[in-house]
Image (cartoon, rainbow, N blue to C red; front, side, top):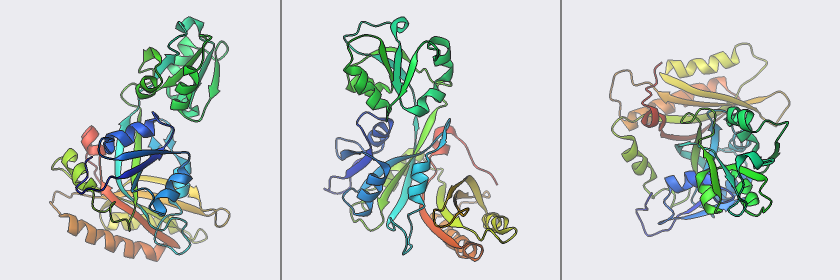
Length: 331
């Protein structure tokens, strides 16, 4: 993405370099016109956006195989225009779907074949994503599996090895960055189906983050068919029978389709939960404009507040899934 002013954007992502988060950041924000910064943790990313040392951040929110990234959900529960929020100025402005493909790598100077591999390094989530391939070629009773912090860290570790018995499962980008030899590619269980969804977040008060044309950029990729999602978090009075049903009924009343529901402990009191709801407005065969949709959203939020203990609207952004898969949501 290019800027529409002279300001070079600072983009944060979960490091190290050559991770899938890095790849997503590259695809959303061109490194030729922006500066991409690897940060060591999700909490460091949220802090950097809150104090505006970075303009945007690209963070993984869920994987089609392994589900939600709970660390990110916990941080998002601390966002919103609330006096007690740790990150009150952070909002979600876009989503991005990155197809995930895993490769098996060995070091350039190892002269190793797959038959000689005795140890494989990768991120813990990858084992489940590549279970069929690993079970067929590297059963756990013959090959040791060692967890590392990221797939790019696995690639970096193997690049330093010389004994020829170690391998890494990582992305093509990581293999190229660390000059590795690729023994196999697309080893995930269902090639083409393993996808990670990322959120793009910003500080709502940042001048540069508000004038970059990100929405226009994504609009051009989506085409004429545009739907908008909203991310809403809320808590309910758990002792009141039907409290959750009452809250969810509001979405149907205002013709919003629930595309995702998740929960996390509130950490404010035991057995209280934060509900994360993503929703999009139903087309209903009409051509409602963006301002009309926003007005309907505000009415929904006002009504929803009657059935919740706390309520935060964390962002409104274009639905990119219909561009990727041609999916049209229906109520």
